Length: 154
Image (cartoon, rainbow, N blue to C red; front, side, top):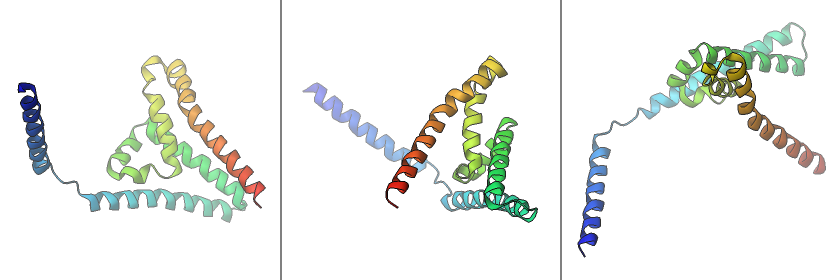
C-alpha cells in the first residue's frame, strides 16, 4: 500500500514539475524561423537558377546545364561544410539549408568530418563512403523502382 502512494506521489511531482517547465520555457519565434528557412532555401535555389540560366545562355542544352549546376551546388555545399560556413548558415536557416541539393552534400561531409582526427585518408576518406553508401543505395533503388513503374504503366 505504501508503494502505491509513493508511485502516485512521484507521478504527481513529475506532472507538477512538467507544468512548471512548460510555464517557464521560452516560446520559439516560429514565424522568424519560417521566414529565415524560406529566405535561405530560396536564395540557394535562386543562385542555382542563375547558374542554370548562365550555362544555357552560353550555349549548353537543358540537361547538360542542369548536370553542371548540380555538380557545382554539391561542390559548394561540401566546400562550405568543410570550412565551417554551412553549419552557421544551417543554425540560422534550419530546414531552409537542408532541402536543396546542397543539404545532401552538407550531411555527407559533416558526418565524414567527425572522423577527421583519424586522418584525412583513413578517417574522412574512408568514412565518407560508408556514410554515403546507404544514402546512395536507397536513391538508386528508389529511382530504379520508379523507372520500372513508369515503364510498366505507360
